[in-house]
Image (cartoon, rainbow, N blue to C red; front, side, top):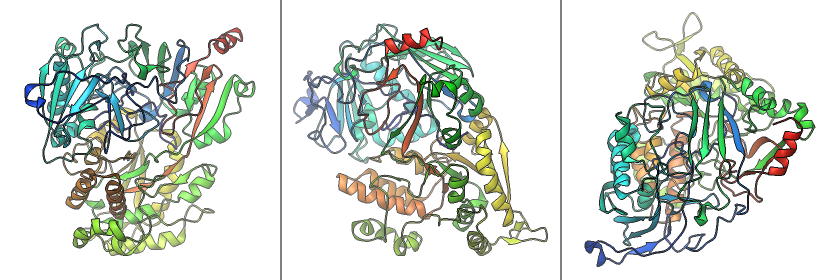
Length: 638
């Protein structure tokens, strides 16, 4: 593990129930299909796209030629290659919708959904597998009409039955959080004919995001599932068949995967796909640790790197191929929502039940010293769950935000109403151990019933020590955790760092067998039903997303206030209120984020300028310059 999140390899941005999905898109065509008799009398909105709060504010009309941020004339060919070393750099599955096994990066690259959102707008979704969608004003249901030419990679048509099968199997046999949350929004699905499917929504669910919830589900070939002979929950290295532009070419478990651009992909002529998916091959090389991965890049074993180590970025990019211009090093500005990287407490453990204990532990992490000494001052701190956006709570609670939280006053900490949103106080950047913070932490622990024993370790009334284990799978992160452990031990906490491999950390996280580990809170620009997966009580004991195991009735109710917001203004106010309350719970020790993407790549990759605001899209719309590629070959680089 490094000091930043692993390279952003096209994980889903807004799809409510997706996991590790490569964004795929379909053309935007406006055509009215025949509707079932029971729907003909309804005043239906028939459209190519939908936004969170309507259909009149879409960026792209039905007849647009391509996304504004792509180069529609980009050449196709060549290979994009990058590395993966997160959690020990291993995998043993190509099936990302189950708890069994560790899925490969891009294990969902094969699957498309009804809808997809572009990278230059928030809250907009456009028809991909569907030709149109039709729904009444109250969005109580939606009818998707599939594109006539949509096919799976084996040449068979994508049918409404496949869509229904995918929804039902995710609902019944998918990841626990899917099983818990899908029924809260979608009441059922009915096949109307081969190309039309109707999703009915739970009348108690929020209106906002209903259509996107159904339209964001991945679609699998039912026939491929039957042919596998395996239960859906079983891990497998032969993926289910999807309809996307890439298929699996090679898989070497724990070492590499290669995805091949499908020349017979059904959607190449769609306007939405112009200038996109330009590489003939995408290759992912796996490394046991980040040090070996960096060495692999300098040697040319892979050719694109999104750097996530400040130490590397500051000190290691001096190798000959960079100074010779063979490799390009760039900082690409981003105004992105911080990924929420944090040390996360396992709230299922009794010792972490008292928020004073959690705050005391948080106080002993010295971000300022860490940033100055270890990160070369390159990072910014995180306080909010919506850091770097206008959804972040600020100032003393007042106005409409106060109105949201007033009904919960008796069940919330008083500080929510009297103080600014909680943020860990800044520490002394000149020394790791901040005595002022230590005094405050010790006082909080004493208030919580933890007092020093004869050996100097803090003990509770039962004589148990306050033992805290940090779980980590990467050598480079040791330099960050070890000083933190020293600070905690200095105030009597029996802290330690335990190094495990990627498979172990995955298994222990899934079984909630940890005290503290590093994870992310990917909250989104228009938070909706996915909040239940991150912070909701339902499925908290076994959720892959609610890592902290937060299960609190007040939070559950506040989540619904956000989810059910009917206007953008209501959503923003409710989200700030939720942010304020979540921060008061001290369920994590926030780490840091970078406002720039640090990238290095061999000088044959190109990208359009300007880049869109919500992603650099290196797998989506970059391309290989054939002349530059040949020049590298002539130099013996490739």
